[in-house]
Length: 145
Image 1: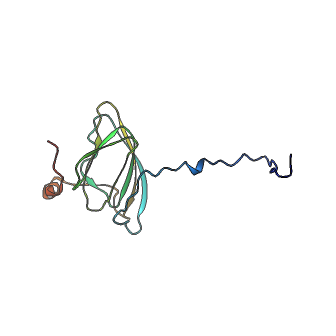
Image 2: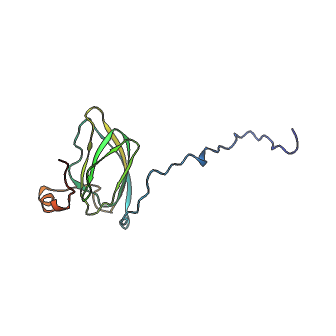
Image 3: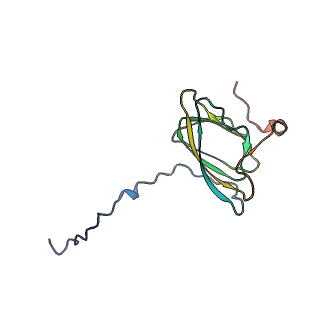
């Protein structure tokens, strides 16, 4: 061993994988994070063809990643769209109604992760009743024919 070579201290060589291990999947500027928010990460799984959660809202912003399958996703004021495995989504929370998150496939389950910032003392998810949906129907994007 020459004097210019480092001594073998029995440690494994340091990996360089960390330099390329990170991939940015989504960036967003949410309107605000509720004061004293609690952060929660959940896994949602729907069987084939399941319509998902009824119209609802969250007390703070939510950021998601589709793990498997497809989701039919619709927020108030935006047209419905399909989110596929490997894609991200987010919603601002607060007063915005989340109309759809159902499984878009009838032949496979859907699975997605969501990290949400919940206002303290408020539920993570609040269902929206039919009366409010009717009052706000003008805020929903046009429906596909």
